Length: 332
Image (cartoon, rainbow, N blue to C red; front, side, top):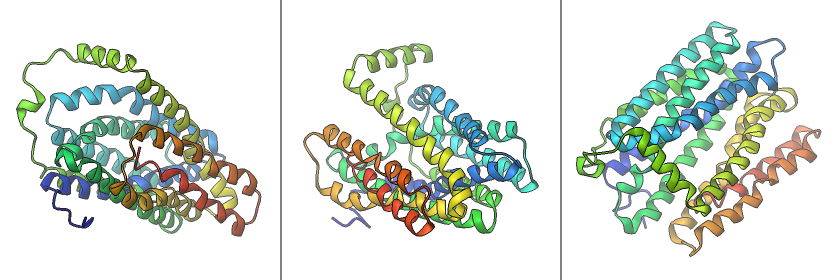
C-alpha cells in the first residue's frame, strides 16, 4: 500500500487530513505557549495559575461535548467544523494580542482558554466521523491509521517548533500562529463535500431528547462507560503532569520552553512509528490490545521521578520513555 497516495483516499479524506495537519501544528504548540504565557505574566505565578487556566479549558470541553455531538448530527458536519475553527481562531487571536501587549490578567487568560475548550467541544464530534465516512468500509482501519500518522507527525513538529519559538520569539507569537493555523484549516474545510441530507435525517426528536437517549445508550453498555471512566482518570493524571507540573519544572530546572517542546514532541513518536504496523496488523481483540498500552502510561512519570533532580544530560533520557506508551494508541 502506498501510504503517500492511497487509491482509496477521496477528496474529503485528503482535505480533512490536510486541515487536521495544519491545525495540529498549532494545537501542539498552543499548550506550551499558553503555559509559559501564564508563567511569564505574573511575577509569582506558578503551577496554581497554570492549573486554573488548564482547568478553564477542560471544563467547557467536557461539559459541552455531548451538546456538540448532538449539533453535529443535526447540521452539516463540515459547517460545524468550519464554524468551530473560526471561533477558535478568533479566541486565540485575542489571547495572542493580550499576551503580546503584556501581563494579561488571570481571569482573561481563563476566559479565553474556556472559549478554546468550548470551540473544541463542538469541533471534535463533527470531525469524528468524517474520516471513516470518506473511505470505503473495507479500508477504514488503514485510513484511520494513516490519518493518525499524519496527525501525530504534525504534533511532533508543532511541539518542537512551538517550544523553540516560545523560547526565542515569545509565547504571544506562537499563539498568533495557532490562530492562523485555525483560520487556514477552516478555509480548507470549506472545500469538504457535504454528506447527503438523507444521512442526517429530516425529522428528529428534540435536542434534550437526543441527549437523554444517548445517555441511556451509553450507560447500558458496561464496557463503554468502564473504558470512558478509566481514561477519564488516566487523562486527569496525565494532564496534571503534562499541562501543569511539566512546564513549571521545565521553566525552573530544564532550561525553559525549548526543552519542554522537545519533550512533548517525543509523546507522538511512538504513534508515528506504530502507524505503519497498524495499517497491516488488525488484532482480533482491539480493546484488549489497546488497554495493554495503558500500562506504559506510567513509564515517563516513573522516569521523571528519578531524573527530576538530575542534570540536563540525564533528564533528556526520560523523553524516549514517553514514546512507548503512545505506540498502541493507533490500534486503540
